[in-house]
Length: 283
Image (cartoon, rainbow, N blue to C red; front, side, top):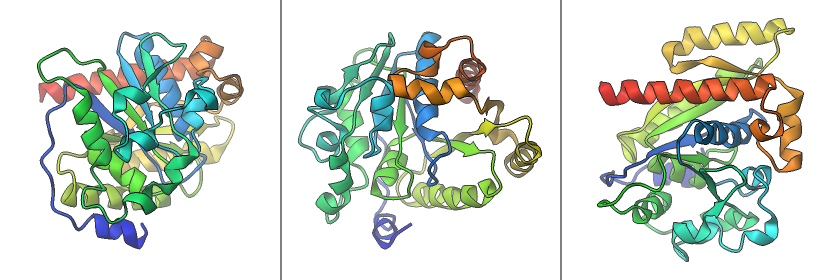
């Protein structure tokens, strides 16, 4: 984390307002681990099995928005407008081609967020406030899940996501340095839990880009399961050409090729997440 993030974590905890929706931040400070791919396809899979899902694109690159077919000219109101307080969240939300799946898109304007609100005392809670103001406590929720696609860094945008979320979902590529990057992320989650969001938990770790032909992939899976135990989802996302191709067509892989192994894996992951949610509520 940079010095600015360290200063943010010194502020006292603000109580979490009640929200009739589960908010999951999809985060990893490393790029290229399948974070945005997971946000898009998990959101689609959850919608396909009956959930109502909102993806909040909090990455200035806007890849989740592009991967769901949202053209740049359609992003007149973006998550930048929302977290700077210029517009309410519902003004930014757009429908996608997937039934029951919506997105609040991002633009490169998000890159300036940290400079613009760097001195504001509530700068770590901007996204939480926007989400809270969207929901009517006396009516049915518009969504059952909110998935936040975080940028590939532990900056103020990611801290906002962690402060707003109930839990973190961590995509982890099956590569040599996987555990090293995970350790840093876990430290940040613990700091956010102690200083901004005491309810924050690790929902689970999803292993991505698994190549059964590569012995290293199998070893990484074994090491991560030994290190993190039941926090690691049973579902492993394989390296799959169809998953890689789908974003260039502005489609989730479940729409691009429902029968490919990547689509099947994300459907299993969605089912596993819902099962964990049931266990959480029962505990």
